[in-house]
Image 1: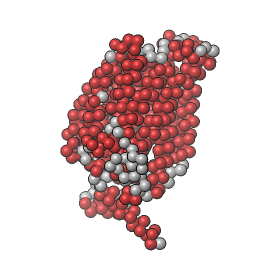
Image 2: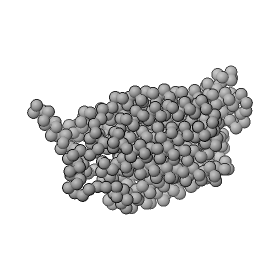
Image 3: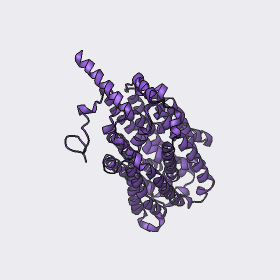
Length: 475
């Protein structure tokens, strides 16, 4: 897919002068790749090891996990609304401080309420990074290579996430074996039956999880340091005078744009997909470890492999967009993973081969479901003008919060009251995915090839950059 000269098929090289890629823009993009890579390592712990830790330390929090995630989403929405005033850098400096504080709180307290509040704040602190790069890259990256750069930043995140996820569970078991004074093999067997742990054994197992959370804190500190290296200007996140003049000459863009039919339809698609995701993704480690009785170290390996599947899927995003267009790529890839979700629900039928079988199914499902994610991130930022992108991101975050609260209440009050609910969730999620894809295809005619066109805003920015470069050369 990538040629020897650094070009992707049909795409200009990153140093191609025709891209008109300002040096400062390029610098910020690559600094953020490092930051997001570090956050991938943090996510490898918060999405896996931390959830298993909470299942032991605060099980009531886990059954309502999506409610606290939704609260975090509301906080993210508030932050996103003010990005056009604060800029990107301030948010990226505050977020790691918040993240570190919440992880320390979850380590040092046994109070369920404090842990719940901390988890909600942690979700905001870590989750905001997922919204920052679409906003930043929609400004900093030329449209011709935007999907490629979206893929690059997401792949970097996934690589570090996969590595840390792989070792996270194994570090837990290793520390547990050292505390207990037993072999790694015996500790691993015990980890597959944590429901039977009591007294000092359970206490030592919980302590083992805390050691990995400290590693996440270390990565977050590094992300904070890197955030200080960003160089931004107000024009990065607010409209320039030329852009404002151009917009007013055509017709003022206001928040009513967010209520247009196409935007509402796309947000509905995102909401339906989010319902499916909330039903299954937070509970991967619990479903595999507690109910399929796959050993803790093996669970880490399986989740690592599915993370690598996402990585492989991301690398195909530019090709998918060029070959099939944005809407078709997103719909087909999402729809194709639904049969595999039905197999996930039937995990027990594989008997003694459950670890291998579920590992393969989860690998394929994750790869297909996420293959068009960079395309989706690029597309949704192209649906609205620059000044409305933070508001649009805030809108989708609020919708996610509402969905999260609804799903959280459903899982805590009904679905997860019985262990079989973890399997039933896959059937429900598959149904939502199918409906979402059918709805999205309505937008095919209008938006399938939108990423191939230069917007008015980008044309103005390009012309301004060319004038600035010309002045520098004349000087």
